[in-house]
Length: 136
Image 1 (cartoon, one colour):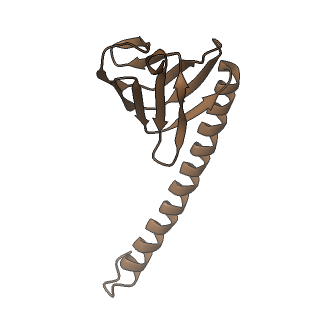
Image 2 (cartoon, rainbow, N blue to C red):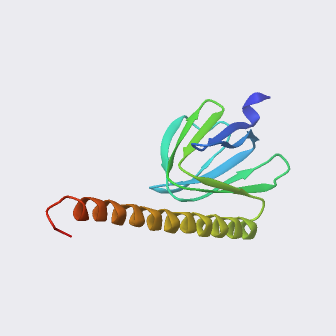
Image 3 (cartoon, rainbow, N blue to C red):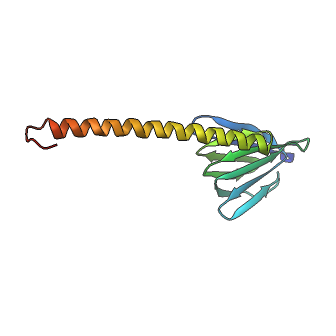
């Protein structure tokens, strides 16, 4: 029966992280953790950075680390839109994946700041040194 499962779709700005039916799920909003089962009433909730847990038919759990987002439950469908997310089979594997992702993101941000600094310096030298007023 269709109402025995939840159709869950988790979307990120650049991809769909999850699109499958689940038996139940647990998410975290600004008011704390909450569970959703197939016949749960419709609602909307914010999602705070944390872990979304889904339970499949066989009782297997899958985990998603999510940034800020929004969850909409309507009928047997749940849609989660999040800023960023990572999927994992276990909490330990998810922890490692999140750590690697943050390290990679931190390195990209560090490089971007460095390039931006060099560009700003070049602009200041060009405008300040080449304006004919002798100001540097």
